[in-house]
Image 1 (cartoon, rainbow, N blue to C red):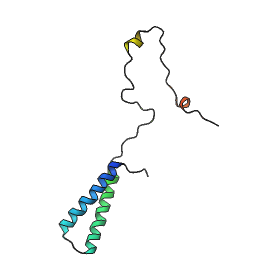
Image 2 (image 1 turned 180 degrees about the vertical axis):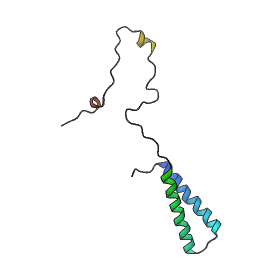
Image 3 (image 1 turned 30 degrees about the vertical axis):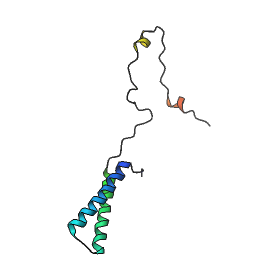
Image 4 (image 1 turned 90 degrees about the vertical axis):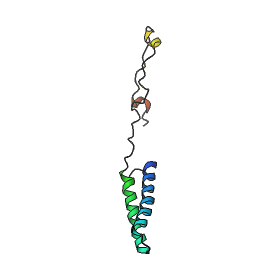
Length: 98
């Protein structure tokens, strides 16, 4: 299971706190059993909220970055015989050592 993100922890914690206070105020319980049941329900609700917060999409290492496909400068296009660099492959970046 992947580690929870900061957003998941924040939403889950806020849900537990707010729902516990709301349920205690609405139920007006004063017994230990009632507080325990409400606390368990709030924890379950917080866990549910934390798990349903969508995790951010992870981009691969070679994913296009913003600005990576910027147009070439006019000076580079006008230079005769200018070479364009070839794209690097994953095997060129990470040689395998046996």
